[in-house]
Image (cartoon, rainbow over all chains, first blue to last red; front, top):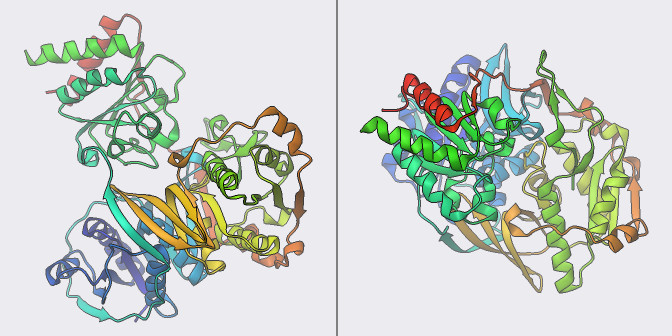
Amino acid sequence: MTSGILVVSETEEGAFELLTKGHELAKQLNLELSAVVLGDRDDKTVQSYLEYGAQKVLVIANSSFGALDAETYANMLHEITKESGPDILLIRSSRLGKETAGRVAQKLQAGCITDAIGLSVKGQDLVVDRYALGGNTVSSEIIRTRKKVISIMSRTFEAQKAPVQGKIEKLDLKIPPQRIHLVERRKKLGESVNIESAETLVCVGKGISNKEDLAMMTELSALLKGELGCTRALSSDYHWISEDRMVGISGKRCKPKLDVSIGISGQIQHTVGILSSKLIVAINNDKEAPIFKIADYGIVGDLYQVVPKLIQRIKSLGA
Amino acid sequence: MKQVVDLQQIRIKRDTREPVLDGLPVLFGDFDKNSLEEAVKIKEKHAAKVTVLSVGSGKLKDTVLEALAMGADEACIVVDPVCEGSDTGASALTLAKAIEKIGAFDLILVGEGSADNYSGQIGSRIAEILNIPQVTYVRELSIEGNMITAVRDVEGALEVVKGQMPLVVSVTSEINKPRRAPLAQILRASRKPLKSWTLSDLGIDQNKVGSGASAIQVVSNLAPQQERKGVIFEGDVEETAGKLVDALRKEGVLE
């Protein structure tokens, strides 16, 4: 195996995003681009990796994601990347991906950067951007060890086809038995909604005083043909809104055309999830709230007065 | 647990976009408090001993008192100026060596990430150094004999997993609500055992830690550039709502 870039993701969606970026980096750094796939994927799925620029697809025999734990996953990746294996690991920053990144980095004695939001080549260096200091800053970093482990937030790059003549290799790895055992997997309560692809997002926070008032917010988001999102407090602490609508560092990262933030002070743990919005609108009664610093438009005022007026105005547009 | 500056108080220099950290108060991050709270809850149920371990500098001796007041039985801190600028690998090595010095343990509890950098690497790296399994993003934890059962929070699903101690567990904020230390405990905290170690106490080669040994070179660390319009309406509700709707129409986001 020649040294190169290895893309690691549990989902094809994530793999294709990383392959697209990996393809660009591999050309700039003159490296081979490969991807690892677990053995539960059918042939057609494995083939599709070649269409996104993978010169080599490594299929790990007798493996599947269902019950895989981080230690075992790290053992697999270590087998592939140690010594003359690929030097740069691009791992999708899912929860499994992120915890595996730290473990495989330790095995490789490698520097590791998690939750990257940007990758670029400057000279011969690979520069990795990530949020630091609780999101107050963006830190641009270079990994000095030869082996480099980077986990990248999903939806950082857009997948684009770049078909290459690649080959598919089957690997039979010898991995020690798993020590953590899956007993059960259950879906989270609540509806299953994909707010990440919404064009418009209405995000609500602790400024909302009663659960009943969410009806008004849902009405507004429906009028805007959008989806409702929320801060961690409203889903994890109050349980008013299901977790798949939680936006921020521990929730979803959204890139809508329009984000309307209502009753949200603008703590960075939440705002990292909306910073990529084209347009940010804030409604808050506190003029000093940090949310206004990242807003394109804002109204300082009581949301209980402002939102009904907005609903009324928008309705009259359609009339 | 990791001592971090109070992130809410960070100010950004307007001209250079540099963060100003000097003189900020330091505290333990919220996720770290969740991990301590869980340890104390386990102790209340299973008669365990809770040791809080932290690597840091300066005010750590004071910061750790809060953890002792919250219910830890003893504290071990590693304070060494050489540790300044350590990367996650070196920090994990320092913690792992300290854990070996503390002696036998059943469970290492950490937060899902630190409040400042949220890299989430420390738990994984310690588990690898100590060659024990890891269970991350845990929101429910129960112990029976030497087995743990944990409910993990992964994207879109909850996983129930079992594992044998010793192991590393990282917890999310959903797992509990950290208690506020009662006054009586705050007063008693300074009388609890507190061990302070340096790198040489742990037998760690000074060349392996600190900024000089860091695998990560920070090129820049600045507040993101803002290219937002910042048009804020104030005053009469009727008027401001009208102005906002007009603005959004001009932006083409309202049909």
